[in-house]
Length: 173
Ligand code: IMP
Image (cartoon, rainbow, N blue to C red; front, top):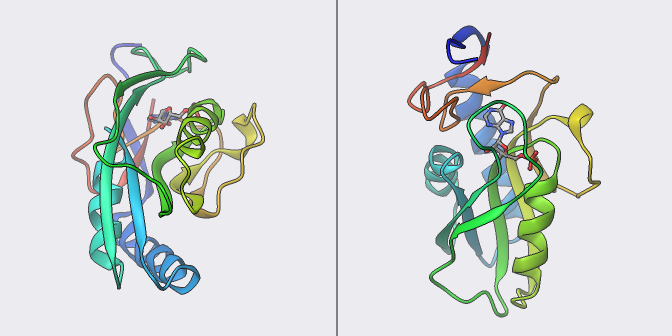
């Protein structure tokens, strides 16, 4: 397991940039009065940075950190909150910014705790979805790319804390 490394570019950097701009346009079209983005660290930090720079209008943001994977490439099914938000969500149009929705366990947990904080609306934008891996049927309004059941790294995503710096998404093997 410890010698897994990127072996194949799955989504090139320019395709990611184009798709993120499209997602930003969709979000602005749906919520023209502005949004409050909540990014889930660490995996979503680059997606968040590119998304905010493509978004027109009023944008505020916040970060939270959760941990769902121990060190490997499969989910433990347990989610822990590592860092909570700095700001309240009352009355805001909130978009959760996630890197990957895999089993859906992390997103279901996040939605439950954020919904309890009374946002006006609560939607989700994820860069990557792996539909075949879903255990919980959790809706995602904005999806960058749908991929097969492959473990991927780059553009913020890690394997054992490595490869977040790649500008593209690569499959490890
Ligand atoms: P879920 O709870 O199974 O949906 O897992 C969500 C989290 O697992 C994501 O936010 C990622 O941090 C991590 N994850 C799932 N698949 C991958 C992958 O292919 N590469 C890197 N991280 C992943």
